[in-house]
Each structure stands twice: as structure tokens, then as C-alpha cells.
Image 1 (cartoon, rainbow, N blue to C red):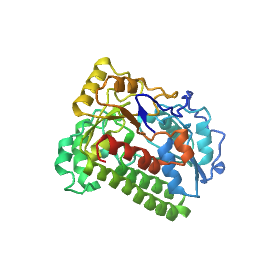
Image 2: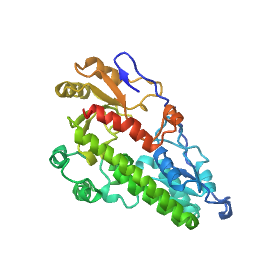
Image 3: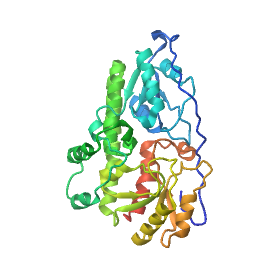
Length: 351
């Protein structure tokens, strides 16, 4: 999947649906709930919940193919459907406000539903939207020290003290960091085990196996950065990869802000093109979710006006999936391995 000056690929992104969350659950009794089905708030959480639960629980992702979980609005009967299913996995962050509303309703009106917040226990590791990555620190240490959880904890503590952990300022894209992802998967497994003790051993075993796979993804990114000849990439999309940058010590420049609705200014675009030409960047990144019709005017502008950039390749923020990836049966691991790792390998000149 590659964009060039002559061809732009079409994505399978769909149209967002807007409605309100229903909160009336008075006519649902505890007897209606059986923990053999559940819901997760967006693609990655759904994939992880499916992997951890195995055959014990059938999870559903209410967010349609081609749509992102943040900024999404559910149909009016979703809360009732989740209550019938019996378990809800979500992120307690304003970026998923609809999921916060559903979780609050379930906890207030139907306490037999297992409500699992994947961000539980991660407060001191969450980054602010305005977080800046210090690439120089990583360059000094890169290749000489183990990038384990312990090594990063001190960095994170110092960083997050600066941001104050205001909920509205927290970047929710924590799932893109495969190291922090292991903690979220463990939280999901623990929550399911608490709600369904008979299958606790199954959840623990599945989570352990999946965490091994996440550690492999982490190692693949480490390998890419070990071989990287550059530490800056350009992304024609909203800023979603701060956790990856912070983990592995590289910079993604984008003329777009943190909101998908934000339009880049002419000055921002000009500065981006200047950076591309100064760095000799030949390939830029783009977000295939940005336009449901596969039109990427920002990509076209950059490729047309830059003297060095000739190609664009996709990366995924993994809050949703596309029809082509779904047809391939690609979950989080496969999309990381088949899309994101190769993309960063190319744009960071780690061939």
C-alpha cells in the first residue's frame, strides 16, 4: 500500500454515525446477564479482549469498519446491549467520552456488569497532548541500555510531573506503545478473571502468550531504531504517535495538530516541506482513515511541492481498522508488523 505522485490509494473508511447514549436500564434484571459475551470500546481493545478471552467470551466492537473509536457516537440501544452482554472494556478518558458515558450508566444502574478500564493503574505513565520528545537523550542511550519498563519509568515520572495529568490534556493513544500495551492486556485479563473466576486461568494464560507477542513488537521497533539513519519522520495526519516517539526516541513532524478536524495552515505546510527538503526525506507517512473517499489533498500538496519527497506510505493509529485489513484477518499484532513497523523502517532509513 503506497502512494506516489501519480497514484493515491483509496481507503475503506466509512461515515461516522452520530446519536446519543441511552441510559435507561430499569427493565433489565441481573438474571439476564451471562458472561459469555461482551463489548470493547474500539478496535484494539476489542482485539485484545478477544485474544485474552479466547472461546470463553465473544466480544463485539460497536465501532464500524473504517471508523475510529475516539470521536465516535453510538446508537441509542448500545448501553442496553452491553448490559445484556455483561462486560464492557473501555478507556476512561474524554477522547472516548461516549464510552465514559456508557460506563457511568452501567456502574450506576446495573452493577452486575463487569466494567473494565484499560487505563487503570497507568496514570503516571500517560502523556499530555503537548508532550515533547527529547530525541537527544535516546540517541545517547540507544543501543547501550535495555529499554525495559524499569528504564522508562523514571523518564515517564519526570515527564508527567510537567503535565499535571489533567484528564482533558491526556493523549489517549497509549495502546500504540507495545510496552504499555502489555500492562493494558494484563488489566483486561485481571478484570475478566475477577468477573469470571471459573475461567481465570484461561485469561491469565492467554494474556501471557499475547504479552510475549507484544514484547516481540517492542523488539522489532528497537531493531528499527538501532538501524535508523535518521530520527525525524513527517506525517500528513493528526498527531497520534507520541507514545511511540517517547518510547523509542524519534520525532514525527506533522503540520496538523492533535485533532483530526484541525486544518493545517499554509505556514505549517510550508515549514513541513522545508523540513522534508532540508532532511532529504523521500517518503512521508499518511493516515488512511483521514478521508473515506481516499483523497489526501495534504499528501498531494506535500509531494507536489517538495523537491525530495516522492512517496507516501500509510501508518495506522489502530483505533479502528479498514476493510482491506479486516479481510486479511489482521488484528493489532499483524497491523503493527505488516504496516507500522515497515513504514517506520522506511521513513527512518533503517533498511
